[in-house]
Image 1 (spheres, rainbow, N blue to C red):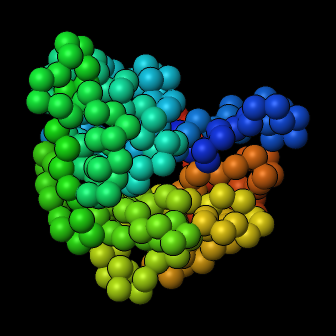
Image 2 (cartoon, rainbow, N blue to C red):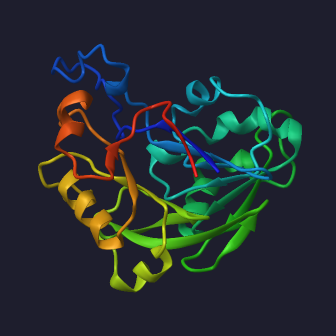
Length: 252
């Protein structure tokens, strides 16, 4: 399994428009963060996790090949704003979207032309599937298990894909979900900043969550410009925890 971090930033991206802080002015490419998204590739599957407004810019750096599934954590724009840019992939057939029933309903409202019976030529060719916590499904040669996490009071989905889990925008998680995250090799999880936030984990929260799951390798995503420079921030992290950055590739 090859994992590519297409984006590692929060909803505003980094640099944030109009900001002159040292992180936003940094020349280190690891401090440039598009909206969070992940690409997972195996011998028989190519899976996109979240499809934000930077998707077009992100995917242009990669081979134009079929995407077998798009897994959506929730309906917020920074996670679904690039769905219209899936239209070229109709060349390979319909693109399968997996989302919670609530997120699916939101997509039908915001992108109605994608889901009508008689579509206008050129619109994205999508098949929407309901994803529910603990109801596993298979994409190619990969077993996918959705889990439920809380984004403040909003229940959203994380996804276990093989022995990797992708969780973003989490504030809390019920103990009953942890059994679905046992035995992970890699955890990708949100760590917004150090200061508390009402709907997101801090970096310290993310590190504690990693220790709780006893994951060998954890990569932090959905980071804002309120953390230190990448080169500095990563030196503070515990063993086995890393700041992800746009373009990072890892293999399992």
